[in-house]
Structure formats: structure tokens, C-alpha cells
Image (cartoon, rainbow, N blue to C red; front, side, top):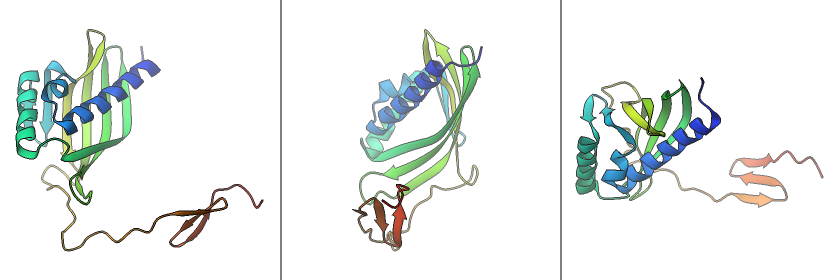
Length: 172
């Protein structure tokens, strides 16, 4: 039987919980988003089993501290039947300590399994954009992003730096 809307929603919530725990460096709740034998494959570096996943997450906490990065996942594509599912999504990671630069982009190809009534990752496989050998994408420090002008709303039209953009409300 294909996945239900409730299954899709539960998987989406699992993804959100996974990254909130990851970004806050909560090792045990992070590891609990995986099956007991779950695998995280980061461009060929594998961490297998909840204990190893929690230990790896703890090393991130020691190295970077909590809240250093923000992971933004998008374009979730979820398919499956019964207690097995596949998920593909894109990742953009931002540095949360300074100018918000993008530090990494890539794609996850995941396998999920329902255990004891809950969806968990059995395999998360991440490949950076550009292929397995690509370094993280960073903006050079000597080339900061341009200054931003605030948006202004004038009577139903959004005033952008390049001109008005109609909201489609008509002329009156």
C-alpha cells in the first residue's frame, strides 16, 4: 500500500526534528532519528549505529559548539510502500555566527523504515553538489555580499530596487 498523507507528514517532521537536533548539537535525540542499525554516509565517511552517531554528533559539539550552522532542506520527494520509504532532498547549510554565508550545498538520498510505529532513517547518504570530491561552497571573505535595501510596500505594489512588482490586485 502506498504511503498515506499521515506517513508523508510524519517523515517531514522526522526531517525537521533531525536537523533541529543536529544544529543544536543534541547527540542522543539526533541519533534517535535513525534506526538502531542506521547509517549516516557523508560523502563516503560512514557512521553506523546509534551509539556511533551520537558519539560523532558529540564531536561536532566539541569542535563547533551549538547553533554554529543552520541546515535548510528543501524539495523533499518522498515515496514508498508499507513500512519502507525513500526520501530525496536538497540541503543548503548556512553559517549562523556571522554574515550567514552558505557553507555547503548538496543532496541527500535516504532510506527510511517504520520501527515500533515511528519512521526512522535507516540510511542517510549525502553528496555535495558537484560530486563526491567537491569542497564546501564558501563566499570569499574579500567579496562580501552587497548591501541590502529594505522592501517597501506602496498601495498594493511591492517596490523593489529595480521597480514595482504588482501583486495582481488589478488597477483599483
